[in-house]
Image 1 (tube, rainbow over the protein chains, first blue to last red):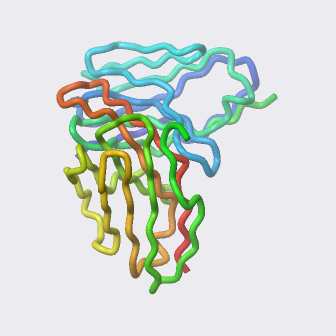
Image 2 (cartoon, rainbow over the protein chains, first blue to last red; image 1 turned 90 degrees about the vertical axis):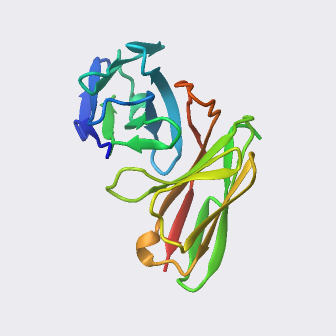
Length: 111
Length: 116
């Protein structure tokens, strides 16, 4: 059974810092990996999707990498802003099914 | 409306009530999903529908009954729920092209369910 772990569980940093969120998964037979953002009491916003054949994806100040063989992904956020404060979720897909999620990293960016 | 919508946004029900959650996607996708998000637990997959056919039931109790009348609409019928079923219920959709690893899921805002 696939398990997804996210480290750290919570992170608080001053505005302007670059930061890295980590995600690991136990079964490397994945189709893709998605990073999401969730604001309190809200649904999920898709940030980036990395297909199993890809190594990284970039969107604005966000960069996600994937090392499928070692079962790891990182989300790099450059020049953090208070508006980046949210919970970041990592999820993997095994194919024709739903996603398996980690518990998330609760991020606070201090003004 | 665009994206994935869910109604109602909030629902309070007693253990003997019967209610339904509704999800609608305006993205032309073929797959729809129900997820449950409980406090301090990871999001859990409940059901998957591809082209209106249920392809996964993730060991969900029978008091939760899904219905997918077409590829744009998904319902979750609820009856005789327990207080521990209180959670945020999220609907998602994706293109689901068989064998395509670019099967990005898009989520609705969720229904916050409280069972008294």
